Every structure is written in C-alpha cells, then in structure tokens.
Image 1 (spheres, rainbow, N blue to C red):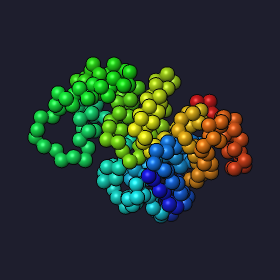
Image 2 (tube, rainbow, N blue to C red):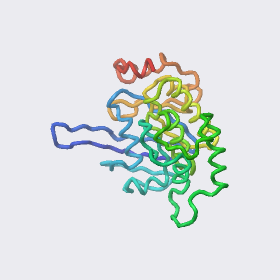
Image 3 (cartoon, rainbow, N blue to C red):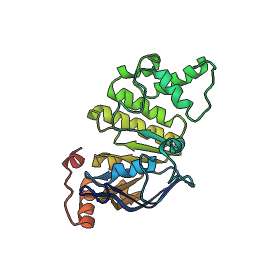
Image 4 (tube, rainbow, N blue to C red):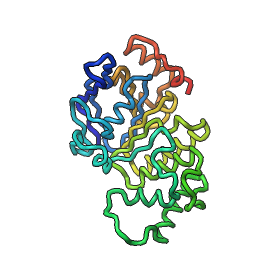
Length: 264
C-alpha cells in the first residue's frame, strides 16, 4: 500500500544551517499494516510523515501509494489517498462550524459540490451512529461548534473525519501528544478500533515507547534520518521497553537520550 524508495531530504542546503533530515530511507507497508514510528528529537519521524503527505518535495527517491507514484504530486492532490490526524487538536477541523458540518465536509472530500441541501436527515442519522461509537456523547451535540469541544473530543472527531472515506493510508502525527494520559488512552483505543475494523494501512508517529510497542503490528525506530530498527510479528508481541532500549544501544552504539519517550 505504501512504497518509499531511497528518499532523501535536506533543509537549508549549502548554508550553515544545513540539515539532512532523511538519508536514503526505504520502507514498504503492506495492506492493513499498522506501523508505529519512534525516535528521539531530530530522528526524522515528522519529516518522513510530511514527505509522504507532500508537505514538501523530497530531493531524491520515490513515494508510491497503492501503486501510484505520488512523488511529484502537490499536497492537495495527494490528499485524495490520505487521512491525517495532527498533533495539535486545533488542526484538522473547522472550529466555527458544527460537528455535523465538519463530518459533511469530510464525507464530501473529492466530490463535486452542488447546490443541493447540505445535510439530509438520513445522513444526520449516520453521523449520530458514528459519533456514538466514540463514547463521548457527541452524538447529542451535532450542531455544537467544534471550537467548543475539549482537546480529546476534537481529536477523536478529527480521527473519525480522517477515516470516514476509508483512506489508502492513515497518517497519525503524534496525535495524542497534546492530551492528558487518560484522554490519550481513550483516543488510542478509538484509533485501534477504527484501524482494525476498517483494515486501514496506518503509520503512527509517537513519542511514547510503551504506545509504540502496544499498538500496531510493526514498529520502526529512526535515528539521524535513517530507519535503524524494524520489529514485527512475534518479536514485537513480546517486546518490552527494556528490550527496545537494548536493541537501540546495540544498533546505534549509544544510549537512547529521550526521557519523555521512555517514561511516557
């Protein structure tokens, strides 16, 4: 479903601030893979996600989604293949519009807009049923402005919007980092439920080693713009934080320095 072939990205090339963020990275995700991505600050996690989303072009290499070469496609044209949830709960929704209006926008993504009635009664009932699965009481607040929701409610809604059209690839960019632990756990549980139910190919960046181990069927660790660990199958099922730290030290020759990732 996703093929990344030897992509590289350098920022501020030829200046004193030159930073090679990605160094010939290759990665393949099969249909239905749920891959978590962990790494310290500056490892290249967000750069990788943004390269896939088309936020900026890569210098070299290719990116294919479901066999389609999207390497040179701009972000707005690539969006037809993708669902995305950002770290900031304020992104991904229209704050001054109602919950049902936001869901209607997500449902109509990629379709021709017409002058027909905006939201039909049957459509509203569908939204109510979908929102009820979140267990946050949003199904009774369809007309409430999204800007009035809590961070966790808004992030859960954004997740629902991002998956409403069953994207080829779901990108989760530390989507629970700004939430308190209890709310983060709820959003992650909802993520698991939606991804497993709809068999979505997913790439989730997280700063939390425990979350990276518990969620998904595969874990990759990045360092200095490269993938240094790729753990899957039975090995991942029995993985612990201590095991992961040991593997990191074996491969990199140094200790993992991000306390926030270790402690969660």
